[in-house]
Image (cartoon, rainbow, N blue to C red; front, side):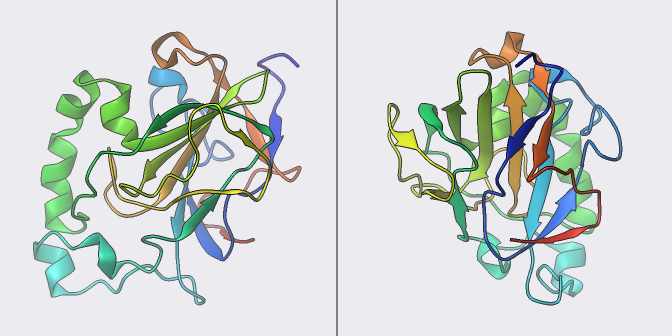
Length: 205
């Protein structure tokens, strides 16, 4: 398989998840090709009616505890058969930033980027499938259940959804890259069960 051919994945979760920053809408999906992120995608866990945490006066003016969000701690599953080759589990979960606090958080983006990929990814797991490495990022501190060297299969629980790294609210960032060396890797296109969801779509897995 060449890097130009999409890798088909299983959805790495159950329940309702809102799609954001999808490569179905634009490439590079996050506005940059740095760190192999051109085809990355974000999934925000939502409740049964497609909502995240209620937006209140506090949301407008103050940071919010990640525990306020319906998907914080929701189980993340392996989307592939592969070997765990990267793991970071020690980064603390931070507050969520919506409304005015999000403006201040955005201003810190350059500083986080200059600190390197791990500062952006937060807690993460990398799974080598032979043709690419699949990274699942922003995981909850202390929640990763698989060691480096473990063999995983689709549906195996690997961690929980968190709010670490470059994240304004609890969500899952997923990307595929050509090698474990993120700084020099190429982005690899992905699909999920034969398709690629678009921004604003609610995935029910």
